[in-house]
Structure formats: structure tokens, C-alpha cells
Length: 88
Image 1 (cartoon, rainbow, N blue to C red):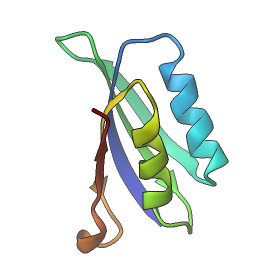
Image 2 (tube, rainbow, N blue to C red):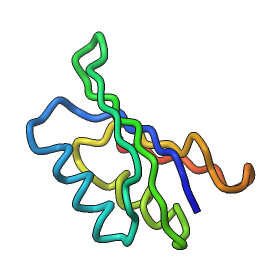
Image 3 (cartoon, one colour):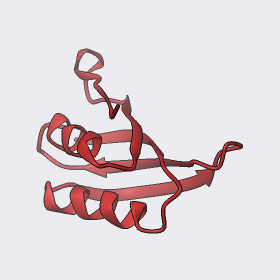
């Protein structure tokens, strides 16, 4: 199943590497990735992943990363499985 995820990240040099590592370790393949810098200087990352695994396995782990401000599934496989994750 394919899912689109949107992340808002702190502007740290290693933050994208951490996101990619967690994505790979959870068994998801990145199909497409787009990163922009917001007006406030944070990184906005949109990416599409493919896997037979439940998307919450990935979003839960991404939400635990220190530099992840917000994480949400913007295109779930089923509307009722949309999830969000954010760190305090």
C-alpha cells in the first residue's frame, strides 16, 4: 500500500538522515520525496512510501524523533486509518 506522509522538521543537518533511516528500518520503501524550507526556517518534507506494513508502525517511530515537530499521513490507504504524530 502506498501512503503519503508530511513532516515538519527542525532545521538540523542530520534530521533527514534520521528520517530516512527510520523509514528503511521499519520496512518502508520511499517512492517519492520532496523537501522545502518554510518561511520560519523549518524543513517541510513530503514523501510517499510503499509497504504492506501498517503505516502507524512508521508514523509512531517518526514522531519519537527529537527533531520531528509534526508528522501526518495525508493520503492513507483507507480514510479511517489516517493518523498524526507530534512531539512536544
